Length: 194
Image 1 (tube, rainbow, N blue to C red):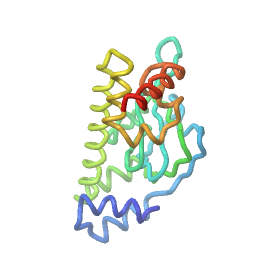
Image 2 (cartoon, rainbow, N blue to C red):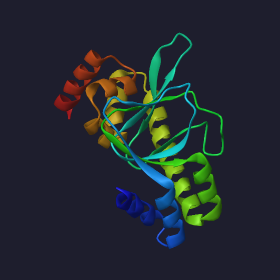
Image 3 (cartoon, rainbow, N blue to C red):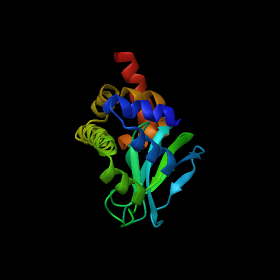
Image 4 (cartoon, helix red, strand yellow):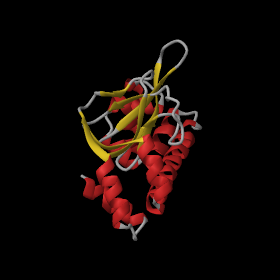
């Protein structure tokens, strides 16, 4: 799995020095989660940066009445932290759950910060990961601008085709803020019209 991660990294930063690779290789651990396993609950202090190597992770938040909603979707080569961000020690009130069997590369926030300051290659990697996250969040914002459910679903299929084919219907419904029954009707209509 580390080799897969390394190839992704090398794609964006072709000249990775051995010392930078060795630092990450010795300061990470691989963690595997079963489908449905909670990785972090909102109140946990989880001072790690995790890069999803395989699988899917959902980031959930709770509103004031205690209702949980899917706020973030993490696919392979996306990252999440248990803190507000990589430069913070404040815990994030997010629940992370493995939506499919998931393997992640986990590094402490302290080690991630140190690597970023020591190695331009790591800094570039973190920049790429952050930009990928921003682009996916922009797509989700575009989806949520669609008032009509069918338009939202059609745009979902257009903007995130990989997500539309890998997530369960239940998770898709959560992500699109609609009921499971409504999603199934929209999927049927979409197939008929396409």
